[in-house]
Image (cartoon, rainbow, N blue to C red; front, side, top):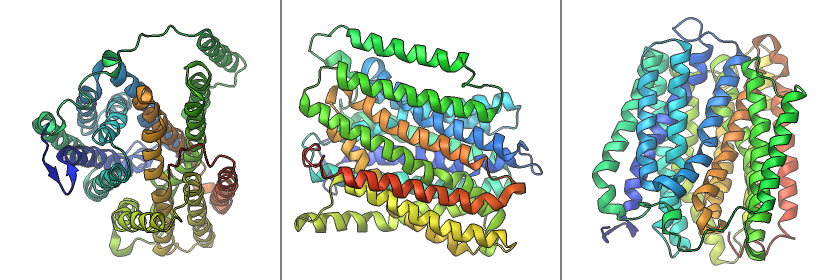
Length: 489
């Protein structure tokens, strides 16, 4: 691996920055127009109703992040992180190529599945390699994740701008094709420079270089797996799981995912042989997981209910595509990420840097504030007047500030608190929180039936209350758990 550095960081960081930027271009660009394409009845879209379209959107974005869990396991045990990133990128590009051509629903869904599988392989493992570039940890790794996070949002901004314009103004499939080209650019950069700038980082599966003797599966693990199986059978036999509609499938998948995550955490906590310190850290990761689920359930409405609001009930200055409202988030990230990072450094020097859980609760409170603004906008829309563009502008501002308090901190915390042997798997769990959040966001958007728009203020207000309650609980938990994070902020 090249020892030369750029701006004080290993050059490998900037390679990963570029790959992630193009992958996020393809993901967020396509996601910006996905629900609009599913609902469109006049310009070559699928013509689905809001319930079906929201469910498909939620299932797709749910699958993208849920598959990070097996993606992390495959990297740890079979492929290694580097090959997982390569194979994942190829699958993503192939999926977007499929979407770029008009075809049947079955073929379209196959393209979505390829993108989801590829993202599950790429997403957790590229973040894990970033952490491996900084074995010393500390502030330099936090700074690296801030740079990496800006790559994510630069890709998002470019993707929403270009794919959103092509999809809404020229043709849906031109937008999908642009996403394929973006992923190709990322793959070319990765193929040319990974060996030079990453050396052997992430090249081999962790299981193959683990010198410790493998321990047999514990009895408790088998009990937990058996209990999970019995629970799922009961849910199916009792009729709780339903598979007769897209909305029912999405709801059933949400329950199934929650059951799997609970089983996984119970097994990690009680049957993995961790000492007391590691168990406390896992408990913190568990709390962060559920806080993140709620946050993403509200935040990821930008591609679902907020997109519908922008398209139907909001002013569109200069005739811009409604999907461009989603660009406020990456734009604000690029503007405010250095500012928020500087504030944390300023407060740290004065011993005032808020603890990890406090930052999480602040993120939820800011999300609640953004949705209270949406309540005002929804009441305006009910009067028959288009809501001012300032409603979504300020909503996205507060949501982005909340994201900056929660997401980079959570990502960094997972890399620091996770037992090293399970790093990729637990990074996958972190992305499962986003998976569940996206699924709930899609289901929530199904309530935006044009015949029931009077429900909009209540729907947005329900998110406000959830965020305030859960944020307050996490805030209160900070004091009794303040020593469990090992000083991580």
